[in-house]
Amino acid sequence: MGRYTHWLDPVRSKLDMLTIPFYWVTNVPNRVSDWVNTHWVSRDQLQQENRLLRNKIRVQESRLQKMAALTAENLRLRQLMNSSEIVQDRVLIAEMVGVSPDPLVHKVIVNKGSRDGVYVGQPLLDAYGLMGQVVSVSDFTSQVLLITDNTHAIPVQVTRNNVRTVAEGIGDLYRLQLRYVSSTVDIKEGDILVSSGLGGRFPIGYPVAQVETISYDPGEPFAEVIARPAAQLDRSRHVLLVFSESPPPARIEGR
Amino acid sequence: MRSLIGMSFVCAFVLMVVPISYQWRWCRPEFVALLIIYWTLYAPQNFGLVAAWGVGLCQDLLELVPLGFNGLGILVIAYIVYMVHQRIRNYMIWHQSLWVFVLVGVYLLFSNWLGSFVGRTVDRPVFLLSAVLSALCWPFLVVLMSRLAVRFRLVQ
Figure 1: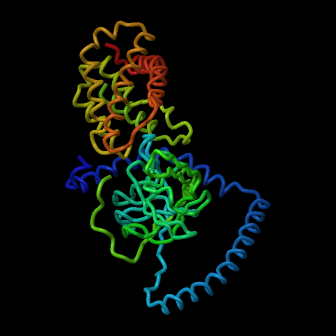
Figure 2 (figure 1 turned 135 degrees about the vertical axis):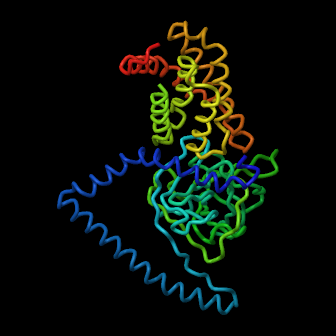
Figure 3 (figure 1 turned 180 degrees about the vertical axis):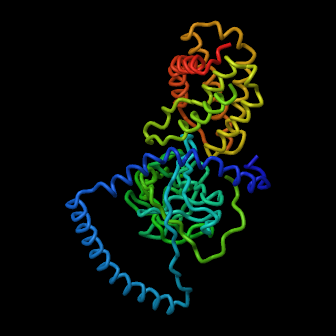
C-alpha cells in the first residue's frame, strides 16, 4: 500500500512510533558499554586519550587555516565568474538506534525526528561520507534509506574530471554499481566519486564512494563499474543530518 | 493464555531486531513465524488467522517494510497450519521440524517474492538458511513452551 499512495503516511509514521521500544531495548547493551567505557576508565587512559585528541585538534586546526584561505580564494574566483556562492550547510548530530533486521532492506533508524526539524529527503552523513536519505519521519525518530539499498540511486561525479554518472545500490553493504557508464568514458580504479547535486536531493561535493573494479565486456553496451561506499555503513553510530539551504521537497517518490 | 501468547510475541519481536553483524545477516531464525506456527498448532482456539495477520503487520512495522510484506506470508502459513494442525500435533518433534522447515521456507518465499517487486532480489537461495535454523530451533521452542505451560498451569 505504502508504495502506491501516500495517504497512509501520517498513520504509518504514528504506527512506527510503536516499534521504538523494541529498538530501544535492543540498544541497551550498546548504551551500557558506552556508559562503562566513559565511567570506568583509568586516569592514564583518559590522559592518553586527551593527548591524542589534542594532537588531532592541532592537526585539524592547521588544515582549517589553509581551508579558510582556500574558501576566500574560491569565493573571489566565483565572484569573478559571476556564479553564486556556496553556502555552508548546517548539521545536526544524531545517533543510530536501530537497523532493519531484514537483510535485503538497508534502512536504519536515527534518534532525531520532526521535533528536531528533520524532514523527508534530508541527507545523512557520517564522518567519512554520505550514508543515505531520510524516507520517513515520526516525532522522535526517523528512518533513513542507505545508498546501498536496491531501491536507491544517487547522482555522482568523478572528482578527477567531473564525469557525471549515477551510483545505484545493489543490496550489498560494501558495493555500489555505476549505471550507464559507456566503455569510452574516462574512469579509473581508485577514482573518488562525490555527490554531484543534480536532482536537488543531495548537496554538492560530499564523498560517496571510491571506484573499486571496472570490467569491459564487448558484448554489453555499458561497462560494469563497482564502487565501495566511503561512509562506514555498518560501523558508524554517530551520524550527521544535513540541513541544506534550499527548501525541503514536498514529497518523496517510492519507499 | 492470551497474555502468554502476547508476551511470547513481544519476546520474539525483541529477538527479531537484535542487531547482528553484516556477515551473519542471513542466520537469524524467524522467531515470529515459529511462534505463529506454534500457537496455531497448539492453541487454535485462542489464536486464529486474524491474530496471525495482525502479528504479521506488526512485524512489517518492525522491519521498516511496506505493510503486508510479511503479513501475507504469515497469513498463508497460519492457514496451512490451521488446516493440518490435528495431524501435525501427533507427529514426533523431528518430524514436526521438517514441517517447520517447509512452512518457514514458504513464508520466506512469499516475502522474497514480494521483495522482488521492488527490486530487492536474492540471486542465491541463501535466504533458506534461516528456514533451516528455524527448523533447528523448533524442538527447543516446543520444550520451552511446554515447560511454561506447566509452570503457569495452562495444560489442557
